[in-house]
Length: 237
Image (tube, rainbow, N blue to C red):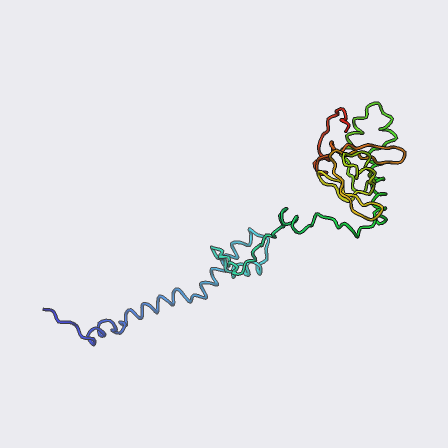
């Protein structure tokens, strides 16, 4: 059986001194090649001489560019704390109704404070309808379309006919219009809600008086502005 080599024998094998011939050859080889810094300088000078006729840059700019490190792969550092976009939670229509955001107070709104709003509405209607020309024309369908699509916030309305006798004669400035009602502030500074259905309203613009049939106005104001109305005979109450 083969004997195991001792530790001293192994050290004598692996850690033998370098032969003299090998040491001399290594010294000669290093002397021939020169130091690494000299080789780097030679390579740099060679590149500068090679690039000079092909570029307009100065030698200082070239040497500065050669000294830079150009990584082959850009490792972008990921931000740990990313600002998360939180979506704003809006109120639903049911929540708005529960909070009463669409309801106007029955008291507190003064009739006199709405006079500037009414004046603005009169100017808006005069410019929109252009009554001096449209009223004298033979075809009044365009005028009727504008009246049906107009905005009535600020209009001074009066109920002339209604199936409910308590609404007849009610007069006030419109502060809110819904699909089925006109909400007006009367001269007594009180809020009244007048249903459009089975009611007839009148309003004046300078020397003209217009009549609105509530049964034809049961549309949301935003939808009425973009709707095309068909001319049809008016059905009286």
